[in-house]
Image 1 (cartoon, rainbow, N blue to C red):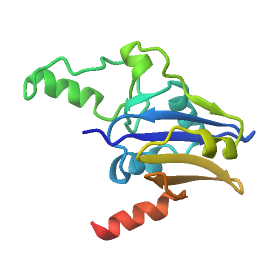
Image 2 (cartoon, rainbow, N blue to C red; image 1 turned 180 degrees about the horizontal axis):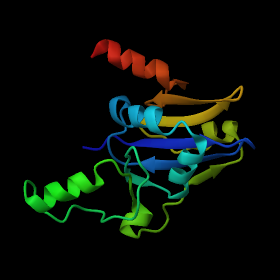
Image 3 (cartoon, rainbow, N blue to C red; image 1 turned 90 degrees about the vertical axis):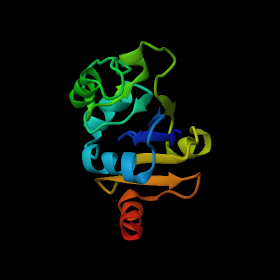
Image 4 (spheres, helix red, strand yellow; image 1 turned 120 degrees about the vertical axis):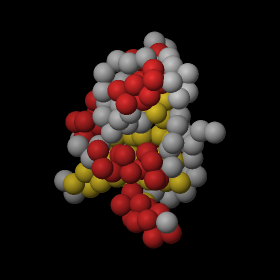
Length: 156
């Protein structure tokens, strides 16, 4: 079962772009990956520019097969997993799908009013010159991702 999420970036001019991610959107996975690997807006823009994702990895990576060609447990399956374990999987780049481009919003207010709602919504914003991640769980209020992750760690 998928835990869907969205990933957004607020640009210096105030515009926002958002992509969808199908798998593992919960805080312990996508939240942690974003917080640890995508606080640099230029790296996040590279991800956003590639459109909607099947799964998020710590690296944007390169074009790869969309599905593992090996049977579960086979040497081919294991080799594929090891080769692409830390890499994002994109619908357009890796599967050739169309209509997966980032959604664009004129500003943060437009984004909040019209964005794609999913179980977890992540956005990197520039707050007083500092790139700061926020998350909204199940369409609730946006909170700093660092605080949400700390709460998850406390309950673990």
